[in-house]
Image (cartoon, rainbow, N blue to C red; front, side):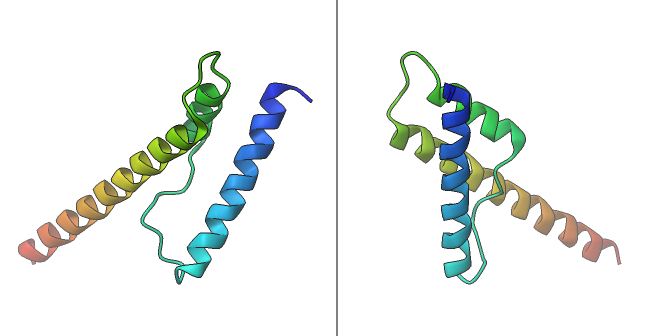
Length: 87
């Protein structure tokens, strides 16, 4: 098995666990879903010759996706308030 395949398996398992955790929280997640770009970033970071600890890499990924979720919600709220203001 190549390193890329091993990383893919690892990320697949992590994603499955994340989905289970989201279901346990009544389906409301404060993260956006893993995007293709985020998966590529994780594979690149995990396959680096001098990788940071896996826990750090995953923490950083969750932090970024949480902030992206918050930005999406904020933009949606702002858009709705503008539409209501015009009506």
